[in-house]
Amino acid sequence: MNSKIHLKPAVYIIGAGPGDPELLTVKAARILAQSDVILYADSLVPKQILQDCKGKLIATGNKTLEEIIPLMSQSVRNGLSVVRLHSGDLTLYSAIYEQMQSLIAQEIPFELIPGISAYQAAAAKIGAELTIPDLVQTIILTRVSGEASSVPPQEELASLAAHRASLCLYLAARHIEKAQSQLLEHYPPSTAVAICFRVGWPDEKFWLVPLDQMSRVSQDNRLIRTTLYIISPALNTSLSKRSRLYDPQFNHLFRPT
Image (cartoon, rainbow, N blue to C red; front, top):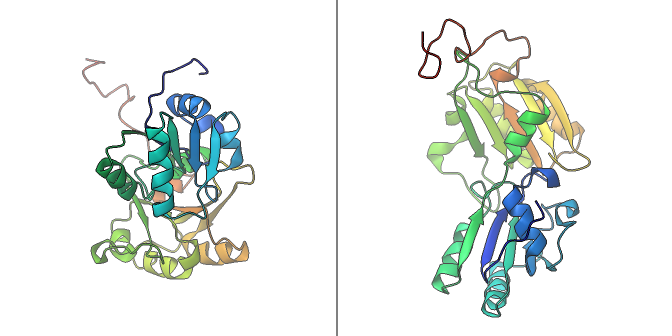
């Protein structure tokens, strides 16, 4: 993983994953280790992710986009390789769209390197598959409206809950009473919920509770941020379903009759 790669003067926007350095992609780890400048969201990216970095570290938790973009652009124009490090995966709530638009406008080259999302790491930690045959085959990744971002009306939690899919709820800890109420409009109160706090961090914690206790457990443990909720019938550990894929009676292209 430590083999040298040639980094061009560009911005490498990297998903750091949920927090465990061993869940970085090989490509992300190589770029991090060799880049000249690393701008990282210090409120969301744990320090252990940066342990092998040799470049200049710039925390951005207290900076605006108008401060961050010039730092990246000028560094690239000076011939340096720049990492913009985000938590989780870039496709989810990473606020990279406006950064990419600014870089394009300034003709600054950039590359996206995806990361593991918290829901994937959390499911692995609790030993869950979120798509069980004949029970649930859909995963919904969503959030509730907050101060920084609102959810479109057609994507309100109550309407998504009607599908009774495996629902991964981000950025909801501060609004957990309202979220629980909306989920209970469609999910049975006994539906299993995994409450996942600081997934991948050294102090990570998990609770498996019925849906009607989700709010109480969150409040009792003073969870207000970095908490993911997985609501799913697939979390019922007494299930006896199995996929047909490896069933001896099921034939397919690679295992014909």
